[in-house]
Amino acid sequence: MSKPEVVAIGTDAGSTTCKLVAVGQGGEVLGSRLEATQPHIELQVGELLGQLRSELGVDGPVPCVATGYGRKLVKDATRSVTEITCHARGVFRDLGHGGTLVDIGGQDSKVIRLGNNGKPVDFMMNDKCAAGTGRFLEYTSARLGVPIDELGRRALSTDREEPITSTCTVFAESEIISLLARGVALEAILRGLHRALVGRIVAMVHNVGLTPPLMLSGGVAHNEAVRALIEEATGERVLLPREPQLMGAYGAALLGTEGKSAA
Amino acid sequence: MPIADRLTARKAIIERVRGLGRKVVAVLPFHYPRALLRAYRLHPIEVWGPPNVPRDKGSQHFQAYTCDIVLKATSFLLRGGMDPVDAILVPHTCDALQGMASVTADFLKPRQPVLTLYLPRGCRDSDRAFLIAELRRLAGCCAEISGHKPNEADWAEAFAAEEAADRALASLYQRRPRLALSDRDFYTAVRSREFLTAEDFGELAASLPEGDPPADGVGLMLSGIVAEPLELFDRINEMGAHVVADDLACGYRRVYPPAAESDPFARIAAQLLACPPDPTRGSPIEQRVAALRSRMRESGAQGLLIYDVKFCEPELFDIPLLRKHLAAAGLPVLHVEFEMGMTVSRQVLTRIEAFVETLQ
Ligand code: SF4
Figure 1 (cartoon, each protein chain N blue to C red):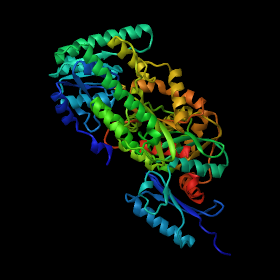
Figure 2 (figure 1 turned 180 degrees about the horizontal axis):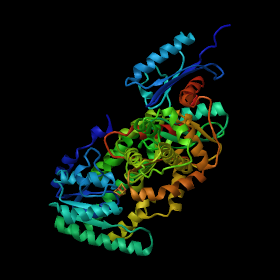
Figure 3 (figure 1 turned 45 degrees about the horizontal axis):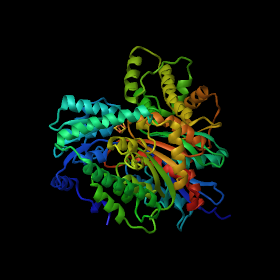
């Protein structure tokens, strides 16, 4: 049987991770790459593209749509599109409906209201302050010595919660230190930290206007405490696409299949 | 040739108008009586920042939540940027500028006199009467600076020149769809009214070439105080969009209609009060929404980009209601705040680009 033909590739060069997705004619995912972002994004994406192309047997040119904060640095891109449009397109394709999409990335977070055709109708971004982004959790993880993929589970392992009053990541860190010094349980602090992050996200959701269903993409979607606390704060069930972290690259690849008029 | 290269530098203009027997006034944004200044033999050079001046010296005198226009203008003053002028006029556009006027006059005490102009926040008869009285008071200060009291011929000459320049500005906007100018060049030309003489501005406006406008793609209307830096227009064009209309304090909000009153002060007051609605004049939100809607419709703008100087209170107060009313009318709106500098931040550009994508 011959290999399915790659029709387009999407790259999402984010601040924390670099993602690539290759899709076929029907928009099906044929291959992907995900790794931590390196300082030379341009070289990294070029290398990952080469790997993906040889793995999938792509010889000729295919449209390559770049998104993410490093999108303008991707030399091989035939076009660049913002993360807002790409995440919207990827999630819409995967989940099949409009609603409110929350994307929490490493350096920014966004709330996007999706129309029934999958196009963003309105959006709000937080990219000026680490609180409310994945960076907040990275800081916490490093400070408390808890691996990042255990943060959510540990936060949900207790009913006790220590409120974190600082709205700033840097000040929250000193608050954590003094709470630990007072002997407060680590899990209760973690739960409070997740609550603080979710509080910022939910405020953005209400600003944009919550149109159900609520969907979550980006690396932080894997954190079960973030999901649970968003559900608790909004009263809405949170839906996840199959590969939350790849949605930007996937949406970019889908736009590549649609040609220039699709964006 | 880019329009910017055709403009006489401010320094040369100052020398030239001095040669014509006029003194020079640095004017802060943004409504003020040009004809009055001219009748009193004064020439305005406006100060909108400037963007390339660091905030440092200004920041020492104001709260952290003061806008860049005030911080940078104060820095500019303290760095000697206003040394060549004979007076500084600070209209009461907002609390920040009113604060700047007091701090400058009472504490910084520059060599030049600091003039103020209190603008009313409405258009009632009482507002008109108040403005006329304010203009008379300002006229007294102008007479002290220039040593000149205008006669009837001076007033007639001043009105003829400044109203011709006002008409030239209005006609630039009318001809916008037919002008073969990039957005950057168009706004460079519009904003040259901030320092050129009325005659030079009229000449420049009349010389702008008509033909196929270079822009196509998504049409945007731009709202706010000032669109800085001009690089913003290039970036918007690169995104596949262009600016088809504006509601900018440095642009369309100063398209003053002519007035016919015989008393010069009443005539200026009528003009200032009849310009397009804007939040600094306390225009009711319904008036603003109606004006924005009709201008967006006429110009074919597909979305409104509200581009606000960070901490600009009068603009920010209106945002929630503007968004609500325009959304109800099905008009897409993006609100971004920017810090004034020589480049536009990546975050701001990403938001604008995403907005353009939603409109494509
Ligand atoms: S930007 Fe806004 S707050 Fe600042 S001087 Fe202008 S009107 Fe006032």
